[in-house]
Length: 187
Image (tube, rainbow, N blue to C red; front, side, top):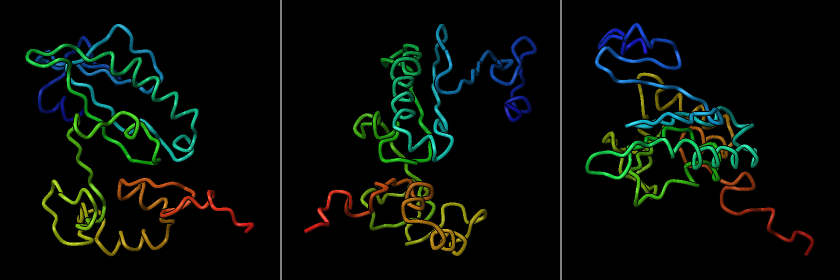
């Protein structure tokens, strides 16, 4: 909002934190998942960090509720666009859980997907880096966290958390390679 105010200017008529309008007529409306957004529509929908923490990410009830909100409320607010069916949608998020909203709604053949891992790994399946990184363990934003910083974080947290929070590759909490709960350990 501050950047838009400085660069474009904000209308004095609609200028609160959750809803504002530029002097050129563009409008922003913020909403959190689960809040009522009926009666509004958009030419560009942006969903940013819909899951605020690990606790909610682990909750199947929360994930189901978020999915219902996404399908029944959020995605129904896309205005028709000239030359295309509905307004584009952008989903920006930390992949906290393997059954998150991304896993439930994103079909790679229908979405342009850009995963930005903290440390680049050319051996991963989707190894094309949109930022042009080519070397293993090259950091995403070296001005913020160096390679050594990130490797230190990795060494001091579980693989489960590292993969989700820094690499964008959530795994099963039961195990990275095998779901250990499926083994019969009595025989």
